[in-house]
Amino acid sequence: MPADRAERLRRKFAEFDVEVARLEAAGVVFGPYAEAMDGGRQDDPVVESDPAGCCSCRTASRG
Image (cartoon, rainbow, N blue to C red; front, top):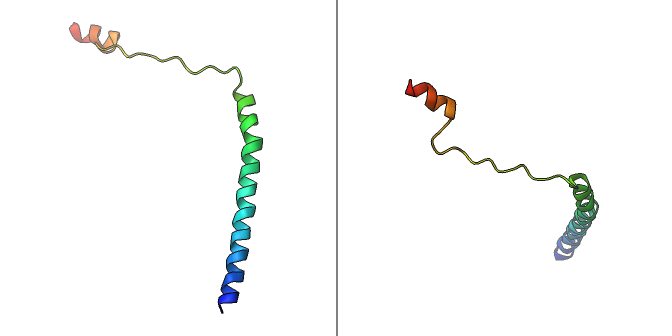
C-alpha cells in the first residue's frame, strides 16, 4: 500500500510541476505583452475634490 500511495503522490507532484511550468511560461509571455499594450499610456491625472463642495450646489443653496 505505501508504494501505491507514493506513486500516486509522485504523479500528483508531476502534475503540479507541469502546471507551475505552464504558469511561469505564461508570465514570461504576458509580461512583455502587457507592457507593450500599456506603452506610452499615462496614468489618469489626480483630481482633487473641492473641500467646499460643488460650486453649483453651493451657489444654488445660498440663494
